[in-house]
Length: 606
Image (cartoon, rainbow, N blue to C red):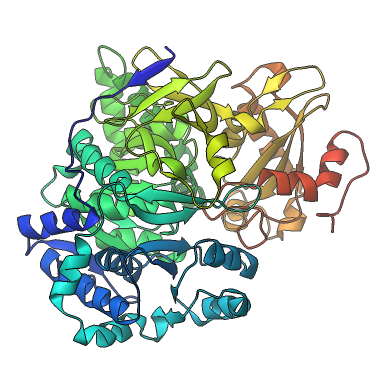
């Protein structure tokens, strides 16, 4: 199949905008909780739809008082927190356009976004963020004000807006229509300068109301709720922020990875939206805990049972009676405890941003958490396709969402049409020409469609490796599998124009101590572990297991452990945790040469 289209389920009045979406929630359930927030280790504090809307109006008045005109660009530079969502909705209530800035951005990146988007007011979270802005502020002529959340920006705006009338906010809330821009999200990108994707009110509005209809089982529980922990500067989190409004769900926020498990336990989400790396971390953490407690065998048997049980669910006759009994035992011993790590109430999860992998998909379904893997880009307002409760094919990213279509070009590239496809890039006409083909969005990804219209992503068009022998290799298959080992943090598969496939690995410094203890090895530094025979033997086995998924010509023959991890801080990961492949290939060229017999390098080249 070369093309598949899903019909639209819900039509939206073209005169509406996102403010009408929130207004509908307030009208339908004014006294039901829409947001819960907390400070530090304090309790979750609920805000009803009416209370949240009143807060939005108060902050919007402050923006008006500060000179924010309809259509103006307001920047938000902060970690994920309640104030981010409050400010976002307030910007829309003031008739303006929000421009997210990653809190990890460098001064150069901040300068580019603020100048390209002509941001007039910027709200940052911390003094450190303000300091980064200060480095370039003299070169940003449109920027009038910088407010700090940690120094009372919200309270300041509320006080400033005391003299602005309710009627003015009502007027401004009605100015935009569906085709108007709601936000400009700058793609973090793995190469080059970020491009500002203009996403409209329609992109979010039409997409979310149709997603709720398509995934109605996720929202049909008595009290649907989700905890948002991904960066709100990224489109996936922004989609969730809007999705909970028509979904009738409660939204919570947390930004510190160290508090994630504790916050999941107290917030108790019924559905989770995340990237695969988080699901891998949760699995690896549980495995290491079992090993250190002398229960490695029990955990491994339970995990295998969960996977086999999930696979059997796809068979016409389902799991056998014996397998059901084994699954119940595994549930009592291991699986139920892992569900408690996720808060104990989560039944559904949506995974996106990178391939989850069949192993984890089946494990979590066997655990009792149905992971609906999806696929999308910033340019598709997050999801373009997703598995649904009624049609889940683990290993695929599902069918197009309602109103969307997917087709496979002659060269295998995935192309998308639909209401979630963005308006275009801000101030970048050439990029728009390059990105659209015959009215379809070029994604840059390679894939196939099965007989049910479910999409399977097979690789990234620009990342296909062609070995010296002419073999085309998609690195994602190998990287995703090998990254599942608890000792492995990141993987970059190499081999372009080389005689065989190799890999650069980094060690997971968080998992390393637990792994060493669990396996009876003494404490050692990452540098020592990279040369330890036991560690290398475990990695050798992991590579061997990974290679079973591919042909001999595509298999990893050699690997090297890099002297440092790939992180956002050192510039090798994007904020959504994608590897900046070209930067790695350039800076670690010596390590790559060493794989193929060249002189080894002790680290990245200056």
